[in-house]
Length: 155
Image (cartoon, rainbow, N blue to C red; front, top):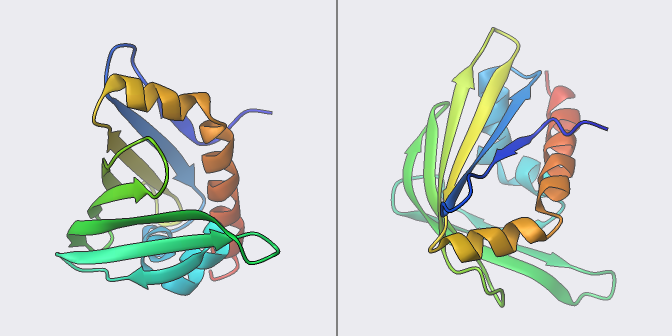
């Protein structure tokens, strides 16, 4: 099965570019990253904080069926331009990947389709390559597929 979310990672670099076209109007795609309730649904996580503004911050947490925290991530929002761009940091707690810089660009393709481009910059090429060894591509594809499915119902 072809993955709809594409990841471009050039050898010897410390960044990667994630691209996905959605069958969603631009405003709904952006809302999927802006609305805490929608983020929680498609990411399958608890949104502890999501301050969508310059100098805002965010924090997500996922627990297993027994209530044990299995994933916790946070960051700062440096730029927030509705329906255009979010610039933020991303840090997984208790993980060796360090802080990443993420530049999310939202683009209208047609009235009913849009594109998301995420440029992620890691501290080093080695850290980026470690991330890519995980089932990263499958995970982001699954999340984006859920985003498409959940947000399509809001049309």
